[in-house]
Image: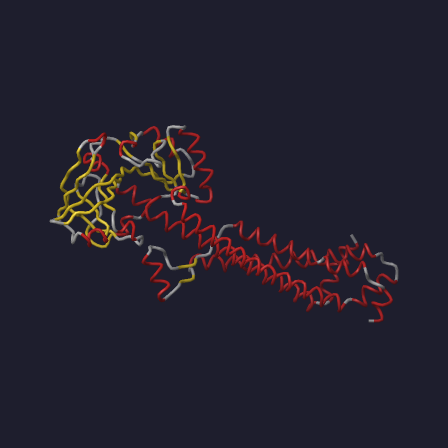
Length: 405
């Protein structure tokens, strides 16, 4: 107990030294938390943009559909399955789709097209499709009209209220053909989607393909994307083997690989930051050892055991590191929150390049509490690890030599 009291008094005996040590830890914690929060925020924003294009966070198909994406592998829309999926607490919304391919014709121009039957309002909740309108109006459930991607409309020289002819192969080999009005034009950042996609109401698509009450997928929006894997596993277990449940990472492995690659690069940068943190803390400890060499030599000379002196130094280090970490975490909370609400924005050609591909040119910070807790623990661990140096010096210290110096 007396060692703890002595450690507390020693901390405040030289306020300038303590302030310098705490400052090193304080700024180390802030930098560490900011780096981690920005990294998570940027990747979460990237996933949000990618998911918002088309895929959703989770898709459910009939077993085997993803390996052979043909209309004959579609499934019957089931209210029971929908209720089972919505029964999971992390599921925010679900939308049904019917997807296949066809030929779109206007005048003497013809092009292959991806036909997607959607539930307009539910689809908008998941992919914000209505916000991508550049002209015309959005679909209603009862419409016999279509939305065209802008690139596709430009290639076919189509405008709002023009008429298109659609031909394809329907369910179980039936012939699919129809004439539809262009109600609106949407624009995607992804060139692949922008050049080939056509939307129509789900009931209109089912009628076109003669696939009444049939769908190819359920697309799901989640409340909390951090529970993505566990939610997908729970849905998979509740629906059984008739269905395949795939996350966005399963649907878009290239994007997952890109994020993993960038994440490894960020870990390297964080490693350099941690090295700077260690050097900053170590430098203050070196200064402390030089200033207190006479004091520690005298304490051992008058009878204090080296083990007691080691405990004293460890307690001082622990109190200083904990105080610096606590203050750093408290100071970083409003800073991270501000960067979450007012993210860093890129400008110039970089911003335009991001926006052309449908990505927001911003760097938001994540407010995940885990970042504050984990980074605080890491800096505490580094601070205590650096305390091994004073311990080493005490073990090897000669009291007489220390007092002479």
